[in-house]
Image 1: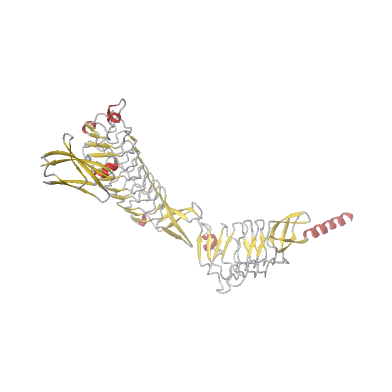
Image 2: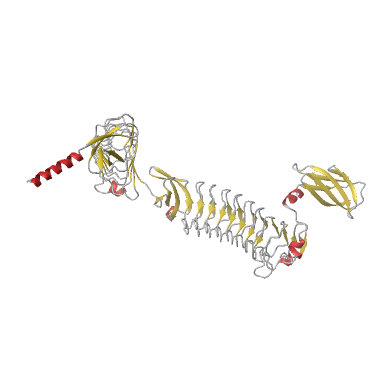
Length: 577
């Protein structure tokens, strides 16, 4: 008998302990009422005094020296209050019937560990958007009834939470104005449309639209192109694969819809369009990277590159039928083999290209090539076998020219003249193996390192003896005669290479000889200062500051005319008859 009494007393004490209620003030000054539900947990219950439109429910509260976790929001806990914003801690696993019914919530972040939402828990509020965590398993009748401005519901659970789907006010998402849920757009995890909407017994029906919200790495198809999500936060995708049923003409859009979400296409993935017999490609301005092999092994004869492409990857356009390529100014890197094995005759390189990779344009037929000043390195074999090239201009900031960079087959080669800018420090094996070369001008006062000797390694192959070398004044020793000099074996060597500034100056001045006068014609960028005229033997004949020089008193013969300008001096040989 005594044991039974002790047992009953114990039960009574436990019940008294767990039914204990107390108040605790939140950070906004609201006096919140709690009831103890276990030795370590409490529930927020009705009877709180709300003094603010904001409520901050803490994760823990302390009473009489005991700290409790807040794990539930009880029946009608804050119903009928003027609360517009509430912070619910992640310790909460259940929100019970009517907890926020008929409040003024405009938004709510549901806790990440929430499991159940009771009947009418958020009924008749002002919610416009809602995200339901993946932990939620059930949502009660009318839980979000009467939120007539609710337009978007995102559910993160791959297994759909149970809800009430009926054509009356007990419906979980019932709109009291439209009397259905037809104004709400539903966003769900990828691959779950069946479980949520279309499978027999599915409950998440009747929404305005249904969108499968993609995660990073997820793919989906739009207009024959498969896209892969790169970033959820930024809504960016890469073109990932192509269905040839879309045809041989490919126009990649800048943006693509997926239900309510619009994604921006910023990349073309590795081998995304490779080996599909594509003939025409348009890449939008949204694309930044064209990755490895993206359009390799097609039949592309028309290519439009977007104005924001920065990197063209390895093998990106190898094995195609392009004859004309315009590289936009946004491109900084053209990678290895990017346009190898093509039919390019016309190439326009943008003015921000810095790196031209190994074999980037090898095995094409480029006729005229200007490499912009932005380029720093030209890789091995970069332009090898453009045998019909007649003009080559190398940019003024190139430092390295790789092995075989401009080598040509001996018989078709027609290029006769190459100017190597002063920025170049090294030139690789066979880089200028061009049988037709007659003149090479190197503008650097410190000779670039080249390969000398060996029929299969020499920078100029076996053709040096046919080439006239033009170098800056006073550099013959460094280039040719000093011990260890590498620029030997050329046909003739002349110290007549002008610097870039001198070259531009010389080409800005024209000397016209008449029967009785010499006229000096110059462009508007120059200021003529004076002239001195010498006989062929070096004797000073005349000086002056006029651009029209009378010569009727001069004997017939050859004269040297020295012209001084604000930007330098030009010396010309003139013949008077």
